[in-house]
Length: 167
Image 1 (cartoon, rainbow, N blue to C red):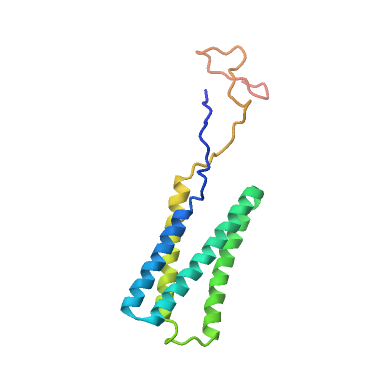
Image 2 (cartoon, rainbow, N blue to C red):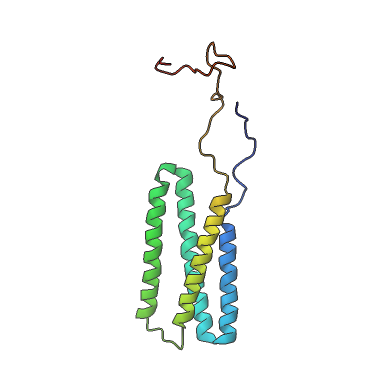
C-alpha cells in the first residue's frame, strides 16, 4: 500500500540561494580583510575575483534551472556544457585582465585568486548541501498507479500475476 504525499517538493525559492548568500558573504569578508591587510589593490583583487566567480556560477545555475524545467531530458547535457563554459569564461576573464595591462598596483593577483578559490569552494559546498536537502521525487506513481492485489491472491499467497502469464 502506498500513501499519497500532499507535500509539495518546491519551497518557493531556489535552494541554491544559500550557496549564493554564503559566497556573497565570503566576498564581503575577503574585501574587508583585504582592505585592512593590503589596501586598494587587494580590495580590487578580492572584489573582482569574488564577484566574477559569483556571477559566472549564478548564471550557470540559472541556465541549467531553466533548461531542467523546460526540457528535463537535456538538463544533464546542458549542465556539463555549462560547467565547461564556466571554466572558459573564467579563463577568458583572467586573460583579458592580463592583456589589459593591469599591474600589481591596480589589482592584487593573490587576492583575486584567493577570492576565486574561496567562492568556488563555498559554492560547491552550498550546492552539495542543497542537493542533499532537496525533495525530488524519483518517480511519479500518478493517480491510478496504486498497487492492486492480484486476482485470486490472498494474504497468505505470495504469487503475483505477471504480464506474460508465467508464475
